Amino acid sequence: MDVSCWFRYGVLLMRRGSENQPHGHRPARRRRNRRLAFAMVLLLIPIAAGIAFVEYRDTFPSKEAEQPKPSDQSQPESPVSSETERSVDETWAAAVAQDASPSLAVPGETIAFGHRIALTFDDGPDPATTPAILDVLRDYHVKGTFFVIGARAEQHPELIDRIVSEGHTLGNHTYYHRDLTKLTPELVSRELQDTQAVIDEVLGEHSQITLFRPPCGAPYITQMEGLPVFQEAMREQRLYPVMWTIDSRDWALENQPESIVDNLAQSTPEGGGVVLLHDTQPQTVEALPKVIERYSAAGLKFTGVRDLLAEKYGVDPNGIEADPGATRPSTPLQPEVSDNNRLSDLSSLAECLS
Image (cartoon, rainbow, N blue to C red; front, top):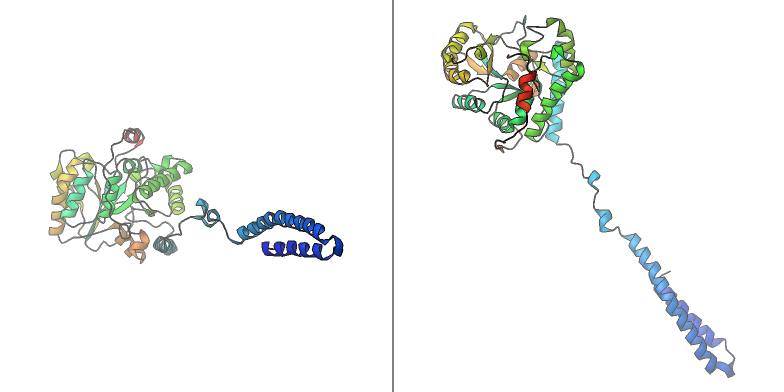
C-alpha cells in the first residue's frame, strides 16, 4: 500500500467520524474526531513513507552491488594465447606419434641439414658478452637460439627482452645449470619450471619454452644410464632436447678466437649442422664475425632450431615453439642493478661448462 492509499484511508476515517455522530452533538464531537483522524493520518504517513522507501530501494540495485568484485574481474584468456597453446599441444602430439622422445641432433641421429647451419648459444645471458653477440647477429642478419640459464635471466631481464625483440629463439638450460641426471624428479621439475617462470615474468605473458639444452650434455654424452628417466621428464614437461653436431669448444679456447674459427671450419660437415657456442665467452664475440663469414663463403645458409625440428616431424615451426616477439609489443627493458646472490649460487651449483 503506497502513501496515497494511507492518506485516503485517514480522510475516510475523518468523514465517517463526522457522519456517524448524533445531530445534536456534531459540532464538538466533529472537531474531536477530526483532530483524532488528523493525528492518525500524521502517524500513518511516515510509516507508509518508510514502507515505500524500502520497496523502492529493493527495486533498484545499489551502486556497490553493480560494481564487480575483484574476484569477478578476471581477464578472459587471450584468443591468441589460447590458439598458440593449442598449436603447441597439437604439434607435440604429432611429434610424439612419430617419435616417443622427440629431439634434435642427439648422438646417433641421422638427419639431413640441407647445407644449413643453426647457431646456438648456451649459458647466458651475460651483460658483458651477450649484447656484443646480439650486435654481431644483427649486423649479419642472422638469427640464433639462446639456451638461457634461469638465474642469469632473472638478473638480466633486459637481455632476455632484447633476444626476443630481435627475433631470436629462447631455449631452457635449467635454472642453475645442473646435471639433471643427478637430481630427484622434484628438483628436475623445479629447475625447468623456475626458468620458465622467469621468462614469463620478463615477457609479461606465458610463452611456453619447449626447446631444452641439457647441461653437460647429460645423459647423451655422460650419465647415459639416466637416459630413460631423463626422457620421461622431457615428455612430462613437453620439451624437445636439442643437442649439437658441431662443438666449437669456445669455452676452452680462452683468448684464442682464431682457434675457434679454425676448429669450426675443420669440424663442420659439408651438409651443415647445429653449432654449440657460448654467449658468455669474450673470445666467442671476437670469433663470431669470421665464423659467419666463413660459413657464408662455403655456401651454407643459416636457419633456426625450430625450423629443423619442424622439418624433421613435418609440422609448423610456430607449433614447435611460438615466437613470443610476434604478438608482443616492443618495450625494451632497462638494465637492473641488483645485489642478489644468484650468480654466486650458480657458480657453486653449476656442474659443467657445456
